[in-house]
Image 1 (cartoon, rainbow, N blue to C red):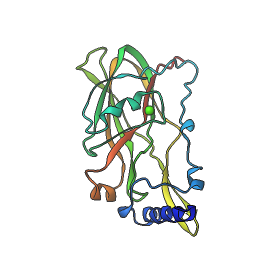
Image 2 (tube, helix red, strand yellow):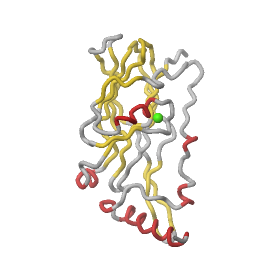
Image 3 (cartoon, helix red, strand yellow):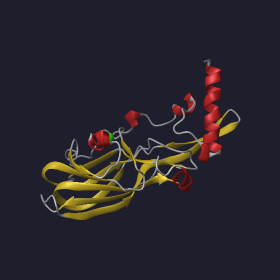
Length: 225
Ligand SMILES: [Ca+2]
């Protein structure tokens, strides 16, 4: 396939994506000149400020989950790499993840990345986590949890760019994390529930069983300054 033919093929789908999101395929390749402007994996790196110590959630053990898909990839949301993501289907069931720090720890900062891994055009939205409900155990109790935060994460930014004489539309992930400041918490377990993602009504109507959630990273720190 020649480069020109390939670009024409891409453009065909991209135009569908931009103009008729209800018919858009998922994740078509972007032309290289646009792809080159998107954030790279190395742009998703969190450098903890001095005095924050280590990421206490890195490689935390999954205790239980209500997720309906991507079970084997859940470790990606606590692997210490903001660029890697968990994604699972079953949109609407609000998956919950209970993680074990391994011991009782103190923390007062949560750092969250929410890249998207699936989309239905800028008219249909994407699967980046939107609303989170976060709880922590009361001390080391595996049965007693207290609410820490209900937060709405900023979503990937919709952007359009000219390609030949048309515009193509896509999403650009945030490279900056959401940082949640908490009173000092002393817990062994943390529970994260994804209450919604950045899907829009056209996609929710047309693909109710195909839509998914994605969450890239949750980190916990104890800031001592
Ligand atoms: Ca990750």
